[in-house]
Structures are given as structure tokens and as C-alpha cells.
Length: 112
Image 1 (tube, rainbow, N blue to C red):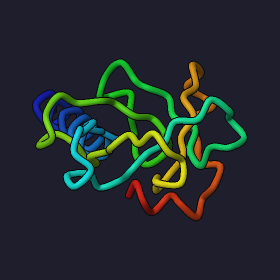
Image 2 (cartoon, one colour):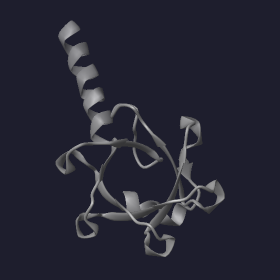
Image 3 (cartoon, helix red, strand yellow):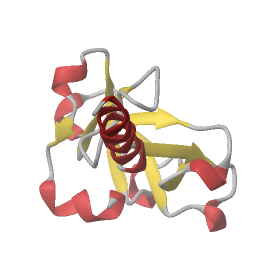
Image 4 (cartoon, rainbow, N blue to C red):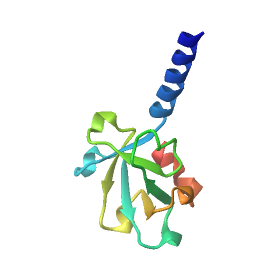
């Protein structure tokens, strides 16, 4: 019974990690899946992003991002552009985890 419980817990943890919004910041536009522009105005953002301290905190496609150091670990590779018109999505960084969300749901497919 104890062995079964351990296997169940490890499976659940693995499922959460596999679904994490692991993001790799690339310096090459051509390597990126998504081009991102960071705005300082929340109302302009398609996505409000909270930068997590651990991969286990990040989840799904809800704006909870964890930056990984290797592109092979990433669910998405993003390129940060200096111009809004060049971006696939516009993000705003929040310091409050509960604020992370899509404000423009039509763009959410870019991060799936």
C-alpha cells in the first residue's frame, strides 16, 4: 500500500512538471516559437505573467512562467522584441501570482 501511494504521488508530480509553462529565452528570432513584447501598462497586455521561482509553481498556459536554462527543457522558446508591432503577444509582468492570466484569450494559442 505504501509503495502504491509513493508511485501515485510521483506520478502526480511528474504530470504537473510535464505541464509546466517552462520558457526559454532565446537570443535568436529564428529559434523562437513566440515573439514577445513586454509592456509597462497592464491594460495593453495580452497576457499577465508571473515569473515563478520553481518549475513546480508554473502551470499550464495561465501566465505562470518558469525560465529554464536549456532550450531542451522548455515548453516554449521566446524571443523578446523591442517593438510591439513585431510581437506575437504582449506581456506584462506582475508581482502577484494570482493576477497571472490571459487578458486577450484569442492569443492564448500562441503559448499552447
